[in-house]
Image (cartoon, rainbow, N blue to C red; front, side, top):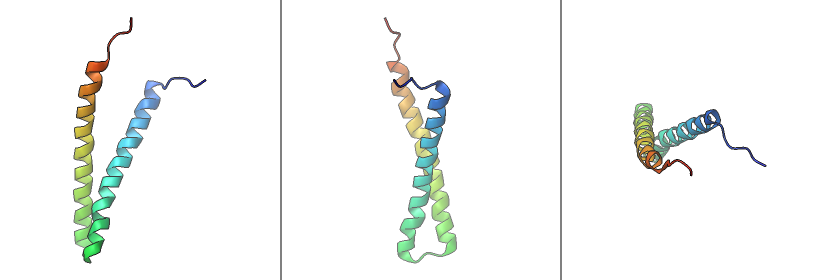
Length: 77
């Protein structure tokens, strides 16, 4: 049988998912900008913008998820 996750395992998993999401959003704009023959400065700016966007999205989705999970935790009978 599979044992339930501990809070430490859940927190570690959530951190990995958040880091992966930020990495994905960070890498996407520079890769797309390569289609237009950019300079190194433009690639760096696209990466910085993607990083900030990724952090913003993780923060927003975390707040959104906490609204749903906090109200759905009811004590068991």
